[in-house]
Image 1 (cartoon, helix red, strand yellow):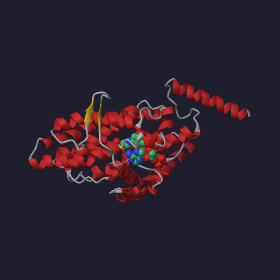
Image 2 (cartoon, rainbow, N blue to C red):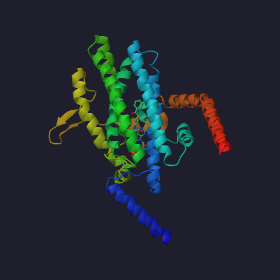
Image 3 (tube, rainbow, N blue to C red):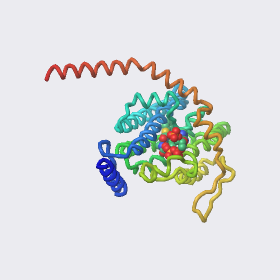
Image 4 (tube, rainbow, N blue to C red):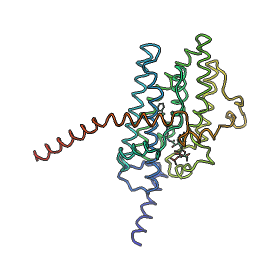
Amino acid sequence: MQGDANDRELEHSFLRRIGEEQKIEPKDWMPEAYRQSLLRQISQHAHSEVIGMQPEGNYLTRAPSLRRKAVLLAKVQDEAGHGLYLYSAAETLGTPRSEMIAALQSGAAKYASIFNYPAQTWGDVGAIGWLVDGAAIVNQVSLQRTSYGPYARGMVRICKEESFHQRQGYEIMLMLAQGSAAQRRMAQDSLNRFYWPALMMFGPTDSASAHSARAMQWKIKRETNDELRQKFIDQTVPQIEFLGLQHPDPEICWNAERNHYDHGEIDWDEFYAVINGNGHCNRQRLAHHIRAHRAGAWVRDAVAAHQQKLAQRTAAAT
Ligand code: BYC
């Protein structure tokens, strides 16, 4: 009884702090479901950053100039860094990174659906930077105000880097759109293939979203999947016009009453097929991750042995 009253008191104080926009920090009391929900979202966010290196990584040797190569290399390295910040933020919730990685590799944990689409042309590298990082920014700017301190602070830094990624992608698209007829065709083709999957990055509709209501209540998420998707749709229309390309959605239409663009239906069957493991590249992405992880085992062993030695030396000196 005493324990129950104590738990209620703790929960009350937790909710009051959320209501007052105070950040929840790792050592603070939090409901177990809040901890698990955050762990799920942050670890899946981390997996997305790391798996997201693969489609662009394929273009490091194929980038059309030394400048493009250097810029793309920096971007891909940034994504690795984002994965590290996010795994570190998730670890503050008490689960080791090795467990999160095991969940990714067994298929128990998801990563962003978009990375199961292949990058087939240089135009796709432009479309990924512009649309995929652009969609990620819309989501992550909102997450800068998430209620968990380490996640919110990680987002601030990540957003700064994502802005550079988005611009490098848009610049590639601009060059192609202003180039030869073949280059313009390449840009249009990449836009056509990446536009709809980019809209799916925001998750299912609010009515089908399992976690949104609770996550909004706890301020883990600050805007819903549909609200963020609409922001992205609205901001992308003038960007497509500036490129002089054709919008992939024939139903896109300004609605003055709503003050937003109306749009066509997303293919939700495709979305669910991809997140359930049946996209173009799901198997390839995971197999590559497992291979690279195994190949890096000696580095992890060496770091552990070094840390053990340091600890022994410190213990002997005291
Ligand atoms: N893909 O209840 P819902 C990047 C899952 S990487 C796959 O709405 P929630 C970049 C969802 O996990 C940026 N799965 O969930 C990197 C859940 O399944 P589980 C990645 C998806 O969490 C390299 C189920 O569907 N950004 O920028 O409330 C190169 C029901 O969904 C997806 C983030 O991760 C999806 N698109 O909302 C370039 C942002 N959508 O877990 C760029 C952080 C939904 O029950 N995450 N699912 O098995 C979030 O904001 C939220 O987790 C989501 C989903 C909006 C994604």
